[in-house]
Length: 59
Image (tube, rainbow, N blue to C red; front, side, top):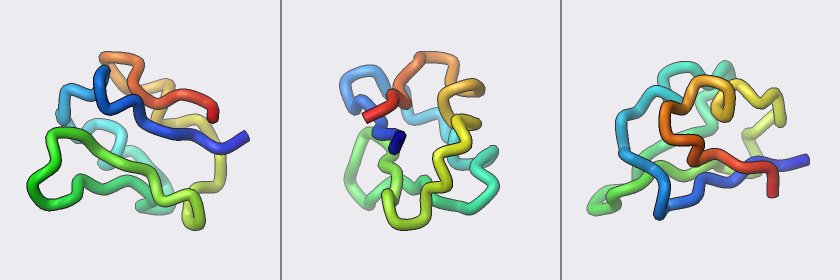
């Protein structure tokens, strides 16, 4: 199951991006939230397990 970051819950701390083993998470310029590149994501769930605000969700 793919993951998606809920922008309303993302606090833009970068923890998920720092822990993603395949570097599938980034913060677009001018955005207040991170996003997951579905093509790179291996659906490991690391982002969801480390996020302090619970923003990454199974899509």
